[in-house]
Amino acid sequence: MDNHNLRKFYWAAVILGIFLLGLLAWLFLDVRHLYRTGVLRTKIRYQREILMSPTQIQDWMTFRYINSIFRLPPPYLAQTLNITDAYYPNLVIGTYASSRQLNPAAFLESVKQAVTAYPAGGNK
Image (cartoon, rainbow, N blue to C red):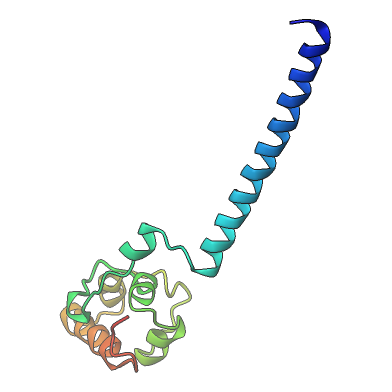
């Protein structure tokens, strides 16, 4: 290959490389847009759609966890159960009941009832 053909080859390779990088950037931005708009959904998002019954609430769970699982507004359980602790919602149900000298089983049942009584019925 002479110098002129080699130069043409390099220019063709550079132009092709720029074109491919542009195409890759466009593809990346387009896929990102599709995920953000919800057209494409990840498998992880479907795994988060696990239905849980309020009867499955345990005393080791925090109020934040329960709010997240049942999609409750953060102040709902605090208002319903008259919780005024500054650490809410980062409180473990069983620990909170013990620290307030409440019957842990009865308090856990009241949490379950409060979640069930939420207008969405405690389901997603």
